[in-house]
Amino acid sequence: MQSECSTGNASRTHDGDARRGAWMAAVQRGDRVAYDALLRECIPLVRRVARRCRVPADNVDDVVQDTLLAMHRVRHTFDPRRSFDAWLGSIARRRAIDSFRRSQHTAAHEVHGRSEDEASTHSDSAAVAALEWRATLRVVREAVMGLPPAQREAVELLTLGECRSDDAAHLTGRSAVSHRVNLHRAIKALRSRLKDKV
Amino acid sequence: MSPRRSQEDLIRELTGTLKPIRPLASPLVRALCWLSAVLILSVVAFSVSGKRTAALAAAPPDALIVAAMGAAMLTAALAAIAAFEVSLPDRSDKWLLPPLASLLVWASIGGFGCLTAAGTPGLWGHTLSEVLECLGFIVGISVPLSALAIVMLRRARPERWLSVMATAALASGAAATAVLALVHPHNSTPLDLLTHAFAITTVVGLNVAIGGRLLHAR
Image 1 (tube, each protein chain N blue to C red):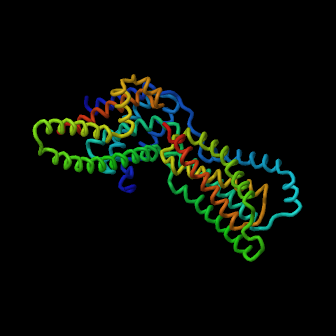
Image 2: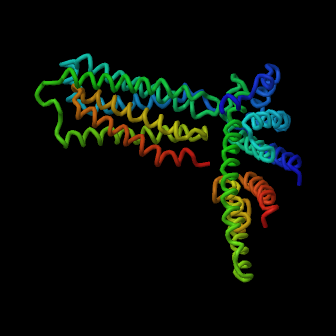
Image 3: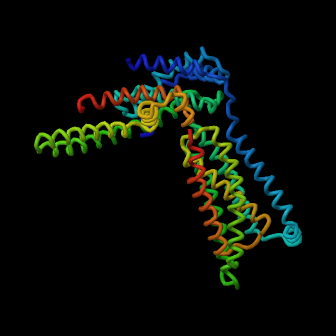
């Protein structure tokens, strides 16, 4: 898996790597223009890592956003004397592998869930309605539980708990921005997962 | 809202909230800072145990004791460097190998010491109270060293927190054992070896269970 997930020589042209490294050094000094340019150049690099790690196409954007958020959190760990692409690649690779594993797990879970639903269709109409309602609840609950921890936390706090993002940030130590992004991604993922089920 | 738009939002929010940040010092420098704390602790422990120090000066310990102490110090230094290296996202897991090799050498020296002492009276070593004292010393010295390591490592927000914490705990346990050997040098016995192994396992277990959460917390 590690070798398949390598950043690849093509993406690590020396000039590009050096330019991004210089931008990251400027980012550590608080240069917002350099950060904007850097983030935009990082997106295709992270996408490439995600594809190499066999992340399903509809999860690639999640990996990109996860990686950019992680990169923001640990930007002080970058050493300008070292390769930026290798540093970013390590962060992206871990997110991509996590995403790949999650997608495998969710796929196995969904197959199991469907066979249980099929068994509950042979009852009278009231019982069928009750069962369907419960099945719907279960599908929704499982979909929420199947979200990555940060997204699940955002749904629980911002939607079910009716917290403001600032309060959620105070409660968890994650930034308000991170909560809002995670909620957005959670809703997008839930919409996609529940599209044909509920 | 399309994913493209969402990434635009994210870029805008990240750049909008950007503040200058102090880059971390190199892992080697940070490991040396931690090892300086070990040195200070050793000097304090050494000066507190005045009688034993005098005895040590009068009768230098044999080569195996010195070798075991050296291996413990080497394990502590290599484990500390490995923990600070692996706490960074782009450093190889291969950094974990040197402290493991050194641990193996240290255990082998201890085992060899036991073999050479085979057949001598009192082979199994000490009384239960001495064992408990030994355990208490290693765990007691390891706690502040581990706490310092957690404080220093936490800033890197390590993703491989389990490896980082286990290696930092190994560094703390090995350093504490080296300090113990410094203030209380004696030939290895099987009970001694078991006590040290148990103490270090306890330190690693406690650190992973408690310190891991502190290190992993975002």
